[in-house]
Image (cartoon, rainbow, N blue to C red; front, side, top):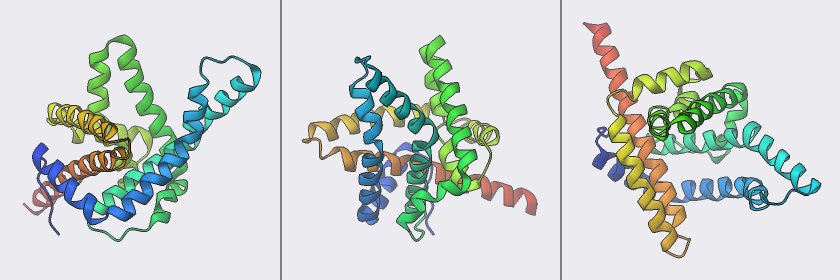
Length: 219
């Protein structure tokens, strides 16, 4: 099967191609994750209200965001990666993360904490951490690694690609903004394209690493 190179242009173009090839599957996944995000959005809309009922709602939403939503989010990334790899897609696999629940939750907490600390102290370290840990969800789902190893592996895989990932992030921001301008509806294909693009980049670097490993073992 075709494996794209890891350039920015190829990542976006191949992500675009695969997005449309598996559009209905990925669109359905996007709808599902949007619905699953509703409890968080509702709680956030009442963040300025400190009544007891709202406080309880926000606490429940916080635990939902920490203990449940990452499973769905990582499942979405897994579906996108399968689309990039031209593998058969089963929407039920969006929930396969419950079979790897502890690793997903711990990886999400660790990566979020590292990125959050980086933004709290100085914004630039936060951006660097976010770029270097962008592959954590793919690694956990694809390689079944625990939290610490997944963070370490993402850091290793993104070595030399930091500026590229940052550039892709900036481009993705404007793609999402453009989607919002297009009567909101455009947000779905915009977000789908962005996720496909990063899945394409991971697939490319992952494949390159495996080839180098095989060549090293064969020599």
